[in-house]
Image (cartoon, rainbow, N blue to C red; front, side, top):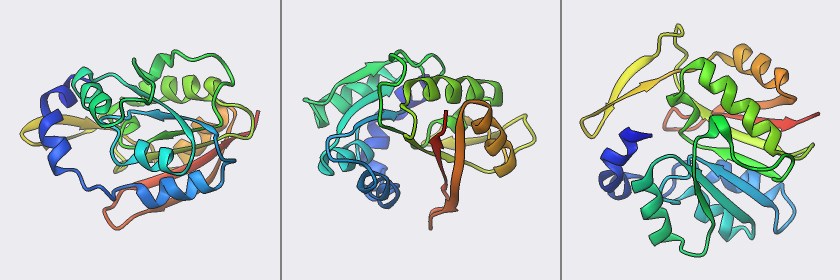
Length: 192
């Protein structure tokens, strides 16, 4: 995503090293040690990828921002990364035990989110969890905001919309909750 190329340096210095970590650790603890986890929108690898690695899992990062991936490589040089878009997830079917998409899906218009969830579902094994974040529910036209002076767009379904979208792609919604920073987490499991 081009916007993240524009803020990569600022993002690395401003981002809290705890944001999303409790949810990721909870997910990681539910997996067998050494599970293969796809980190969608991995950015610079901190703190989400590092938390997964520290829990003993094999992680593959996926991001479309070349500058974020350069920082990822500097932070976690031994962890595989792929530059690509989640809407066309470039991995073989059923190759991951879990996936995390922290802070990425809500940047995609609703039709692109549907493609992203379909693509992610194909990459997951049956029984694999998917943890992702969503933003404020919008009317489909999106909400505009800024980070460090760069304009971003945000799109989110409501809970029933995500439940239906997940179900359509073989995933079952298990839990929805928000953290203190108003990030909304959705936990689903691949059921078919």
